[in-house]
Length: 223
Image (cartoon, rainbow, N blue to C red; front, top):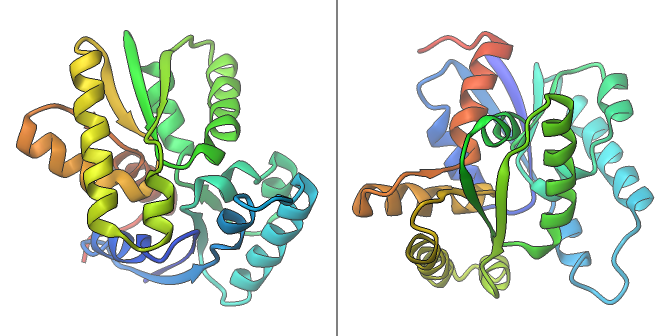
């Protein structure tokens, strides 16, 4: 059975990952560290060097459990994973938005990408543009942030968070009817699925492309 260690920025992602990989012969160990998310909201957010040191410490701690691979589901931690750090690590490291970048970069036509955490916008989009440029793609992406939603998820107001993201998706669809909608973060995936099912409006999210990439990369087999 494949052993996967997951690093989350919020505990709400644990159940989602367990359900997603339930059909596969995998055992997931969850590590939750909201420190980066909380500190970024403070008056003195950590430096890039401090965050990378923290990430290295987390990865080393997770490695001690002898997993076959590590998955980072927090977009802020993922944004701090340097190419040098990844290359030097003895295990495969996958990020929630890595495969998603391929999907967004290749998609033709206008797109709207919704974020709930404002602090993830710049580092995530920098990585997306770098990836797109390397692959010679020029995606048409417009960014929107669900204002105030991040505070709701961090204080465990799940229904209020659901309503805020739902409202944002509806508003974006109404104002950008010809644009393809996507959500950038894992915490929005259940809401995006619910919205797409009930409204009949496609909404892309990182989890589908991530699952496909992990099945291919780790050669996962069904139970």
